[in-house]
Length: 440
Image (cartoon, rainbow, N blue to C red; front, top):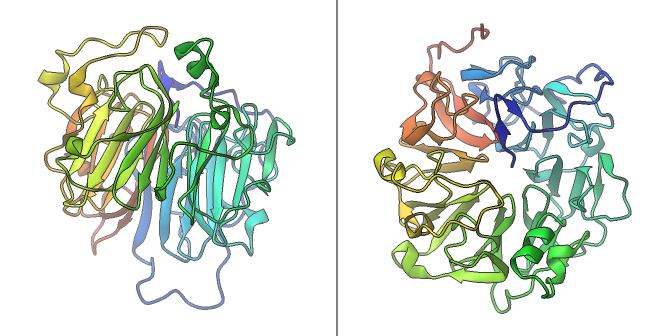
């Protein structure tokens, strides 16, 4: 996850070395696609595009969804993810395609040049990818056999291998993670992995300084200081099935539908009044109307969860509309202070509240401060919109979920967010979406 300000992304300038010619749009298997193939499915991108992270072949921001006409993988896209300035998608056959900023090798292509169109990762040919997660400047890849690979910046130990160089341009297995992993997540400068036994491992030192400032003179748990996978303590006798990460916090979902959180809590995203939670703490069931949680996603400083009845709850930072609540109410909340200020104690933001109109959402994704959801056959967006990532043609914040109308009859299937950009896999109708034209 990453943020941008002042019309540009706060990311290092790209390496001057030119990128080699992009590889073809992916290998074509000898066997034909299954009957429910992706012939009428297309990927759309909108929002920030300073590094080509939309895969459109150029670096102009897109205030409206644009179809990636030249990207047509042979299998359906099963997951879509984005980081500070890069994007990654995984197909049903386990192929990984990447594009965007590559200064630290976060695309895993063996070079440091930007890539403006989705390109397959050649070092992973023959290895099935199950999931991908993108941090600010690094990428975490979960292979089908449960191994974890990482590439990109290692300046904060976020690759899980302290002996690697500061940047890694080809995905490498995290050798010290011996457990079989079933889910991964990437924060700003830390990563998480949930294993088939329900354990959680964390690595990357992004939280350390926050932990020390919150509790000076006290020891910091090893998993907050580790540059290689370290088991997260305090989750005994529970089985975690899914993890997600914000800029400086972590969230774990158990097989019983309970949420545990730890890390920085400036904006009440941990549903607690402490400045920092050094160890996992459960969010009590009453915050979700005593319903079990079945899915959880995180932006930089806000969290979204879905319960067993389909309700979608949001909480945490709210000043960009990222909670999807009524603007009149939000404008009464105190303006957020710079990061050095004390944590916000606004109880109204700490309390998870269901968002009207999103019940039953089949897909949810969080950017740094914006969100996407699929419900009723439409893609909804809300939150920070400085670069047009809400897809309404403007750069004004969106304070409540509303359909991305420019997608027209295209039916969303999968959605994903980067820091300030959005991606959606859609099934095209018999007609046109009107979005095949090039942006002006």
